[in-house]
Image 1 (cartoon, one colour):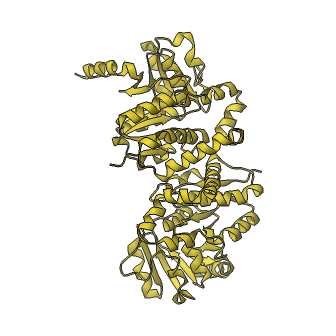
Image 2: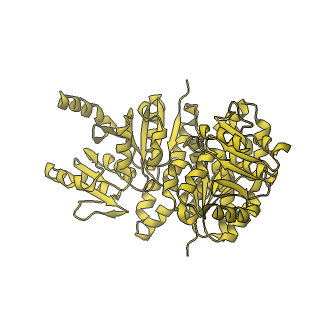
Image 3: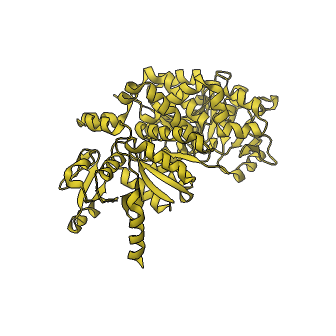
Length: 252
Length: 252
């Protein structure tokens, strides 16, 4: 049987992919899914990705920290933005976080609405543990790049390529898009500086003085956790089973 | 002022691009836009790209040859399919052709509906003359890949990359997608066989015994013409001015 690694380059293309028979890896390297890995690894109990800004503040009354970003900036009145560093502050340990971002949260929602088997958050911070887990699941994979407002981004595409290369020997069906992403990652690895200089989103963040954050997001295996969606919440996979049981009880 | 070379990887993404202030290059290397170049260079008077199959046969009564392809196959009852070789047969000289293909004709229509400044057909067969002309026009360019049923294809993306590389020194704004296409073309140039083996559409055509056609479509500058849309018709650019005058007269 053919086992696929698909790469979806932007949310605008997601309807081309067999999401409902795949595990979906949500990818927003700069910075949403990186920060999710940091948070989960730093002891956040769970994160609720929220699509619309106005739906976030009500969570505060339920004891949540609220995190919000649009166009790279932290939203006014929010406890935190999208920075990986704010997701490792002491106050996040044991906390619940409701989070909205320009692209990343939309991606998770889009995968869930299309009944993905599982939705997990991927980034350089958890690339090795996540790849290993995907190989064990023996299911089609969709590497789903958040991109930037329905456009492609260099860093998400290259990251999807990095994952695809690691999955290659365990899967047997590689559509053209997957090959294109792999090719990009190989080229980026060889000429890192040139590509970083050329990335529009990287440049956008540099202008905002976020070099250190960007560098941090590109380091590998700094936070070896698998954040996975259970209902509307993102948990560490080791907590997810308990969370699923609770979820079922909630609905009985 | 910033002058852009955009690459649109599939028709599903076209609404991201400023088509109405750009010249659009329609790209369907295997085989529609290659065959269009062959036809125009072989003396076809003009080609009418038609989106729906059922709209083609009525053109026969007006003296047109009719060309039709779906999923790689010539349509029953049509004079010709999508093969570049059929577009160089003696009977095409001076002929008018109405043509429908799986992806290529849709791309041209999509660009026209969005009020592109000009729509031209691009392929390896006319890459040098077309690139030179684009540089002279001093206008934003959208390299618009037909892909395969809203998905990306390796050969269209790589061809867009080849064009972008040639345009690079004359333009100054290169979004991430353009860079990704360029990277792919460079990689393909270095490892042609590997990528050809890996291309799904190439494999599809090989299975249909169309190796020679594919090879022909990948040769450069075999048909140095610029096919350009005037109204609903594709003309050689040298005929286009007269055609435009006629078109205006038609509407007066």
